Length: 327
Image 1 (cartoon, rainbow, N blue to C red):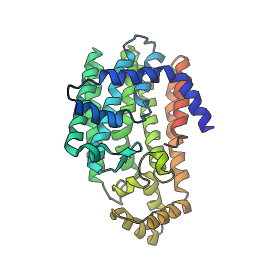
Image 2 (cartoon, rainbow, N blue to C red):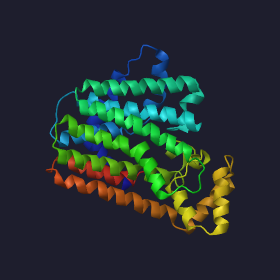
Image 3 (cartoon, rainbow, N blue to C red):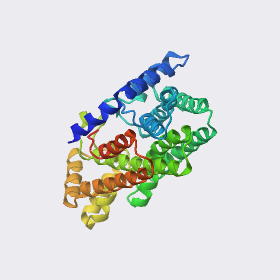
């Protein structure tokens, strides 16, 4: 079913994805070749292009059909990649999308400055839309994402992090960008306030579901499929929902063990496998998957206020795929 769903989505958006890819290469025009090389290291290494795609689909659903739409949508991929470059330096991540993280190849300073360039590029494209609401939105989410990263950093290796705290971080770091992509599609189409609110709620809830599903994969996927080392989040001190829920359910002995792993950057493979066994005891992965599915349902409902279009089904399919994917 997972493969069939992916195939269905890809057949619906293949032309858009091709045009987004062309636009990303065309618009990336730094005068320094090094910036092009570093940005391309991650930008053209297999990203899903979900964020620009959401803007394109939502804009079309709201009646916008101008040729500049694909170009405008690239602002969200540039912004997304900028945050990945910065995050990998902060986290000292080893891999990204199946390759060495950029800072290990080109250096931390060069990688951070390239992220800055992509951030500026995304804001410049926002300005090209001529829509003050989109410019303000781009600035707002950039601010919020930075604070989300700081909040995550403050709570590094904190065994007392709650589900509420986790969702606050997820909203700021991940969901806000998908939410903004959907909102921008409605804004550029001059949609009504009710429709703008509906697509915004879709984007927010899809973003939360996406991140929960992503965090589950850190404990269930294989490295060559996931594109990064399994257990990387925990090794970097990031407590995500599978660990938070397991800590809540664990007995005192198990909790001591889990807290020890959280504090140990160099925990062993055996310790990680023991953690996975504890997660299985409390059915933690299924709990998290149910949470993700609940946010998918929250995402689907708001779209019902919008007159039916072919784009509705694509958004519904994307919502379902968010929790079915394996990378």
